[in-house]
Image (cartoon, rainbow, N blue to C red; front, side, top):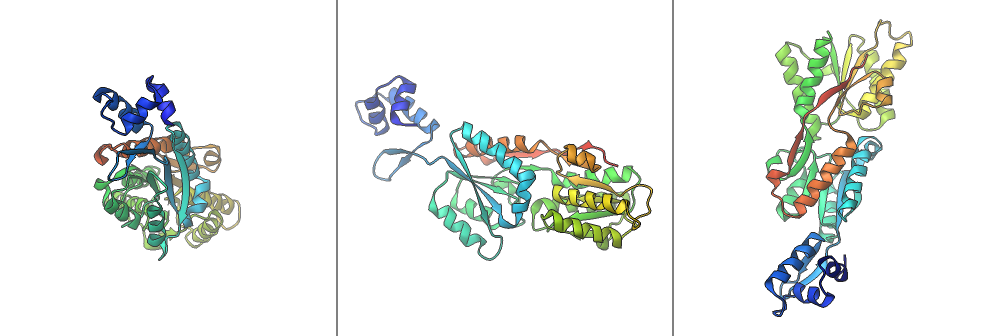
Length: 336
């Protein structure tokens, strides 16, 4: 928004707005207060240590996605980011998505991005255990919101599913259905959500007197084809497994496809196919047709909208303690 548009909004002259922004003594305190409040609302920032010089901020939010998760953008995160982009546009912000490798160069790449100063804030997606990006942004006091948590969750703004409860709910759901030989299809526990879901599963199993053997746990990535092949081999090697808990929607679809195909071959003689629970899996037509039980939070689009609103609030100075939102999971569809 230009100075002229601010003047029109407040029914003032362009000259009055300009002089108010630059703290001229001939402008009344009341008028200055009105102009400064509107300027701040529209994204103007005070620049320069020696002069009262106001310029409009870039109004860009940068979303950081780990490079190896690009496959995952085609499912949940793409819908989350679409919701975020639409909500930010309504507030006058642009969303740019940047991928950063999670290897040795991660922090140096991130440092260059932060120092470029081309954004008003950051959205961090798929937070990891001891995430270095979180540590750096906290040190620099840069506005950011995480979709997910870390060990330092009390110190920053975040939106997350109660992943510990997701794990417990999944295990209890299968136990109530009579399953006692349960497998887990996980991803690396360097992702904080996976760590919490595994912890919830193990604690729920212990409370019920069950043991989930280490050989009944399979770690996969986010590529659906590779996950499908790994799940098919896993099921052939462990015919005693009657149910699977999949920690991502990608692995749930891969596992369900493997279950369906194996069930219609001579490699599997069970009357019923292996049951599949998908953590954080949308209850859509595809999920229903594959017989997946979904453990879900809010819809991805709604989550994206919430992240955008939290990001704007954080930029405006809302304390982080008021921007820490935990979503409760629920069973939204019963599978086979």
